[in-house]
Amino acid sequence: MIEFQQVSKSFWTGKQRKVILDRASFRVDLGNSIGILAENGAGKTTLINMMAGLEKPDEGVIRKTSRVSFPLGFMGGVNNKLSAHENCRYIARLYSLDPDYVESFCRWVCGLGEYFDMPLATYSSGMRSRFSFSLLLSIEFDIYLIDEGMPGTTDVEFNRKAGSILKERLKNATVVVVSHSAQTLQKFCRSAAVLKQGRLYQFETLEEAKRLYDYQT
Ligand SMILES: Nc1ncnc2c1ncn2[C@@H]1O[C@H](COP(=O)(O)OP(=O)(O)OP(=O)(O)O)[C@@H](O)[C@H]1O
Image 1 (cartoon, rainbow, N blue to C red):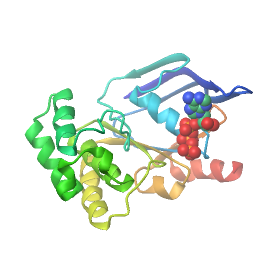
Image 2: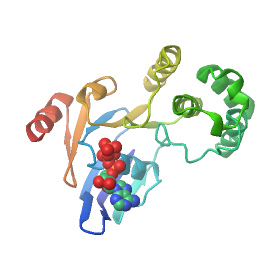
Image 3: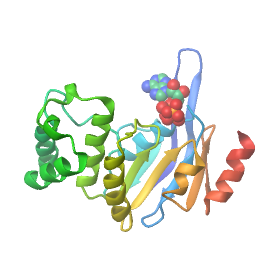
């Protein structure tokens, strides 16, 4: 479970205050995957980062009683000077997992060939996405955070392989996905919310959320 209690978050741009959340309270319960719709710049990445613990609220409390993933596509925990191979072993130790398992799983999923043993700094953005996605899949979480705005990959073979592993994982896990597109959310969730001007409106179904979102956009 992730619970936001009276959470506020805003940024000062030098000219005005950009409000992301204004005393918002909501919960993400295990077993109830939720899609959050928001326009570009409304605060999707900031919201996901707060759930992951990468950003702190200005006010209020965020409580977590489950293992919550880092956001899909997040590369903050890896070292560009090291290879995927070395990064895997490092991350495995951080999460108290078997380094041999994490390394061989990621090597198989991301399909980077000899690049797997070369520094991340030499990767294209698609290769980086493949590596970070495989790393996320190698660790079991209760709640997976997906920011749809993250760079994707067009590698068909990778998408097929990683997609089917994710689908399998999500049978027992919960997902929070933020996107500006209802179509993307449909793939992951039934219930949904709309983030708009500092408020989060929760709905039982994506259809209801879409009605508010379409009405406002
Ligand atoms: N550290 C910061 N300082 C000032 N403004 C920030 C900061 N981080 C984010 N913002 C602003 O807050 C708003 C929300 O940013 P965020 O990246 O969360 O939005 P988003 O909905 O994910 O956007 P997009 O759909 O374009 O990826 C934007 O206007 C952004 O410019």
